Image 1: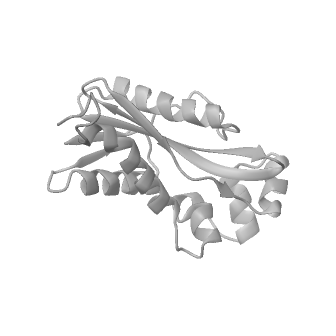
Image 2: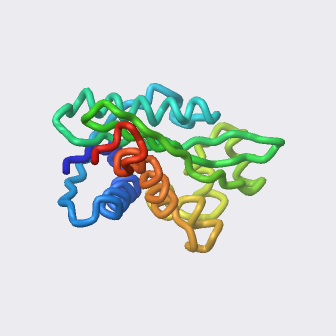
Length: 179
């Protein structure tokens, strides 16, 4: 099974691999990284913009490498809800059969210090690195890992969410399943 992931980020690649190998146990899964534009801001600031970024990444990866079984777009975003900065991500999966599915991660409430830096114009990853005194956390455990002391990580949350987005492809209850 050939899966194109619209990212070079090792966390997104590992999460996608984990989801596919979990759901399609026993299937040889080839994960290929493909840079793909999101068509949204580098730091999406709404649910709708983040969702659109994931969809655009999967579509652009499909156009760049049309010979695959699946294309996956992952996009992290933020949104302020009742003065609380929340982080989340959308996962968009396109199948060779033309069917698409998507799922969203849980929302993670971020500390006020992170919100203050984001309000000053920093991207979330850089704001997290400053507040938590880390380096390149978005290619590690991310805010999920930093705030839960590693009990959850960006990779684990993304892997579960990609798995949820894949469910319609593997469950006969969905009209476009691959079964």
